[in-house]
Image (cartoon, rainbow, N blue to C red; front, side, top):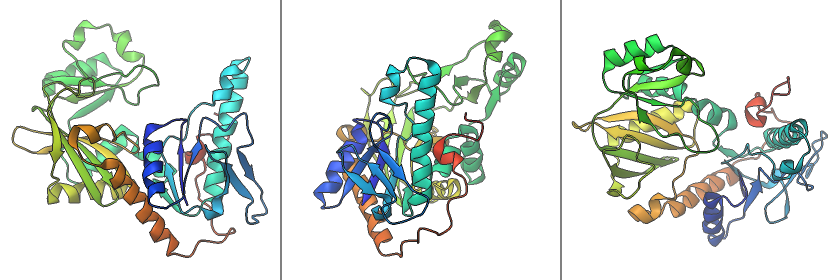
Length: 339
C-alpha cells in the first residue's frame, strides 16, 4: 500500500493516485487538513496489529502496518474545521493537535519508506543549509548574504554587482517573486531590520533548468527567459533537456547528503554553460511541465512510487517494538513548549 499525506484536492496527489491505481496498486491519500471534525486517527501504545489507523480521503480506515511507502507531500496544513473556531486559541489547539497527532502516529507506527523522511525534508527546505551542501558537493552557488543590516547589504551589492533579493523562507498567501535590488542605500535601515532576507549575486544568462529528481531518475526542462523569476510567465520557450552525466552525479550527491529520495531543483546555466545551483524544493511542483514539455511526469512519478513499494515488499517489515524514529519534532511540527 502507498499513502500520500497532502491537502484536500491536491492535484499532484490525485493525478499520481490515478496513475498508481491503474497499475493495480493500492494508493490512499490522507488529507492533512481534514483530520479535525471526523474520526480520522487512532493509536494505541500496546502495539497490537491495527492499533494505528488513519482515515483516507475516500473514507476508508487503513492500518499503518500495511503501508509500504509514504509520500510526505503536504503534511502541515491548517484544519478546515478550525476556521469555525471562536478564538485564535481554539484554532491553534485544533491545528497543533491534529498536526502533532498525525505526525507522531506516522513516526511511531509507519515502518516503510518515506518519500522523503520528515526530518530530512525539513532540513533540506532550509535554503541556507542546502546552499552549503550544494557548494560542498562541487556546485557553483551564487554568492549569498542573509542579513538585516542595510550597511552589510550595501557593501555586498558593491562587491558582487547586480544583486537580487528574495525571502529566506516565505509565507502563505501571494507569492513573493525574486527581484533585483538597486541602490539599497536609498531605503531606510528599518526596512531591512524587520526580518532577514536573502541577497544573492545575479547569475548572467537566460537558460533556467527545472530538474525533477525521482529517486535515481531525473527529468529536466529548459526554460528560456530574460526574467529573473520564470514562474509568473510560462509563455516562454520550454522544452525537455537532457541531464548530463556529470550533473546527474553531482545532483545525486547533494540529494543523498540531504537525505532526500526526491527533489525539484532549480538551476541556471551561465552563458558558458556552467550549471549554477539555486535551490531544491523537497516536495516541489512538477505537473505543470507535462503539457509544456510532453514529458509524462505523472507516469514517471507513479513508476517511482510503485518501484519503492516493490522494494519494500521484498524486505522484512520491522516488528512493532523495533526502534522508533529519534526525532518526532521534525514530523509533528511541534515541540515540548507547544509551539
